[in-house]
Image (cartoon, rainbow, N blue to C red; front, top):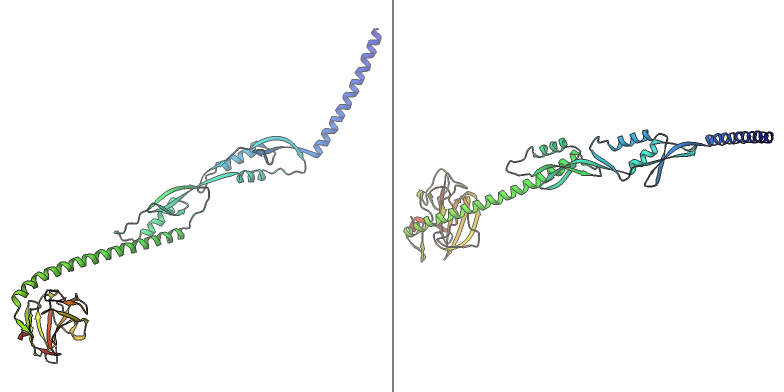
Length: 352
């Protein structure tokens, strides 16, 4: 019995050794074939999508961290919606393993946010540049020759966006310069209107003052009548040249009466009538001619300003012009002419 058991053990031991050898040889053959046809690599996936294969997980992770934490230039930060996952796989030996392919896929799935600087005008963004120094330089250049009375509300603000589009310094400067020109034009227009309104106000006050002065003069200066019309002196002053006289400044007989008085003194008509001429006329300078009817006209020459226009009806209370020294004149005075039927007569026969 012991003999039989011993033989049985020996037989099956030999068979087991034989089987083990066959399995070992088979496994070696399989491993050899696998090693010839395949190689180990880590499959990289994001959201279940394969983006490539790498041989070293630590190495690719370091590259990804370096890329995600890069804040060079005007990069503010980078974000990716989901981190990559790794799985060890056997892949065909001829299949390429490239970190570059994985990094390109990571970059395509990454959102990069940039920090830029906007130049603000009156609360609105007008240009965007890469850095604060450039924005300050543009503002200083635009403001360099700006009138201190013109307020150009320029400022700088940080802005963040996923595009990296910026304006060149030339573009930004041109845009802001156009805004400055428009602002200066607006200021100049407004100032001109204010000055015009002030001048009109001063003129109104001047006319009012002259009206009071001449109204008084008219009361005491009415000296008689001409063809049934009551006459009043046009200005107070001293007679500097009489009718019919000759002087160094004229070669012919004087056809009027010169009354010397202050520059800008208001001039009134000798009586009511209609303006038939109001403008510049040769040696008369600024001239107003009034037709009083019945063949009577009066001339008011050398005026500094004219306040009436042709066709306008006036009376002895209307300020028609101001004493000046335009045309052939040696100083501020009124040259007064009275013409009857087109011929000049001596104003002193009726006035002064």
